Length: 484
Ligand SMILES: [Fe+2]
Image (cartoon, rainbow, N blue to C red; front, side, top):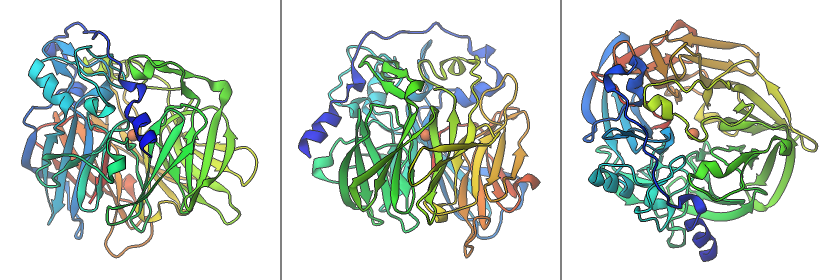
């Protein structure tokens, strides 16, 4: 185990070299949507009450939405060179008794401390070359803790993908250091897309090259086991999928062929390889099988399930080729549009017990697919996803709810002055069907220059939200969240 840990700690991710500083861009020329990519205040936000601006909060809706995303993109007149490399800020939206309140705090990282002190970007990252003066002994030295959050054993964890989670106070969001599940796992990476069985058990991957560590975490937060599988290629893997009995690792043909800074520039798109699906038995990691599918790129899956005959179905937002690689989001951070035009398709991948993977594509473009947590890994009907687009504005503008059992979908269009973020299924108390859920997530109202939190009833999202709360300010667009 020690050997594997050392291999992970010395991931080639973080080689230093000189930092490219972009030219300055005048702030007063920024378009209204830039508020989603603007650097948040160093002191964070709140706690501040959110104002109910629409609807009537449903009785029984009580809990906390935690989210994470990059929130610092500028030092002086220099901008971050990739959206994914901004310092993580965790947002906490507490909802209860019809009221909502927001708190936002930066994750307190070595990267952030050193860069704030120097007043410039120093650390290498996903799409950032970095400065040779930045001390890098392991990937955790540059870990911005900026992709997602999870609750485990009463702890709130801020997640990156090439480093260890940070422990945060669930109320104040104060950073308490790195999470250590076990001595020999100290410093081990933890992907930003852990999966939770309906009984509370969490599974996740630790990736380095063609080796994947497999975390199996008990519902009480203690670790049950950590194993290792060979995924065949050093593919870029941001997310994966799981049934009640199997782990499915989608090895997309975006493969690391060189160890150069920035990290993502060492990856090459090799569509001739297709997408390879590794299926691993949860009870015995040595029991694996492979299935071959056509080439697709992806960041996010919804979830998977297994039919009685062993056929596995999983849905994902598949792109024809990689997006947000080198320079991803760098234009938006400067208030300009990158002009990316490679829409995804919500797709159901069907993996038969033997033979090749078949893709059933919809015409629904978008990303951030989400499912009912009560049905994760089990057969289900619904997938929610951010969709829609507005000319001359980045991001999604609508929320879709796909029903796989009928092939029909509902869509709610927020309007041209909105950037819509991931919406989570929140089970209604006492309910059991997927439609016994609310869909809850933030959106930035670019006309008002404010962030809002929207709640829909999954029975009918096309009718519009059941409640909308608005902040007096906007916090930056985030990536992923969890409901506690
Ligand atoms: Fe993600």
